[in-house]
Amino acid sequence: MLFAALGLAVVTSALAAPVVGAMSSIGPTPEKAVTITLYASFAAPAGWGRGPNNITEPGPTLTVNQGDVVTFELFANDSTSHQLIIDVDNSHSNNSGDGWSYPFSSKTTAATFTYTANTAGTLTYFCNVHGYNVQHGTFVVNAAPAPPAPAGDNTLLIVGGVIVVVVVIGVAAAAMRMRKKKPGP
Image (cartoon, rainbow, N blue to C red):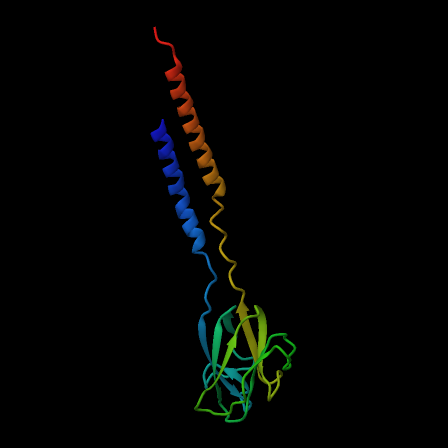
């Protein structure tokens, strides 16, 4: 009986150990680095493009995930000054909290602008120099996935296992005591 109780205790702790290990490995998803190349133009065709030969108005839809660190490589296809605004509040104007690049005007050398996509939703981007009506596009930031559900609290399993072990040991001890007390012939 005693060996059965010890065996049950070992099995219970062995079942609980993987669950505890699984719970400790849960953590946040790290950010991802994303590079987006954009060409701006005020001259016909006005707008934005992923390359110098595909500029449209509205510009291309840009899609990233919440938490991504986005590096924009910016070119001025018409060699005039442009400034990229990530319009977080969709106001079509440059407000506090919006992301913005420094003005850029080179057709051959990229200006870089790094933006962390913290706000999920469908945002816009536009040129601050020429305005939303002339140069804009959609910037989609997909919401971060929900954290995985915990593997489960195994406290009840452990407590139940301990109670079973204690009961089995108690029954075994009581049975042994009763055997010793039986009067002999």
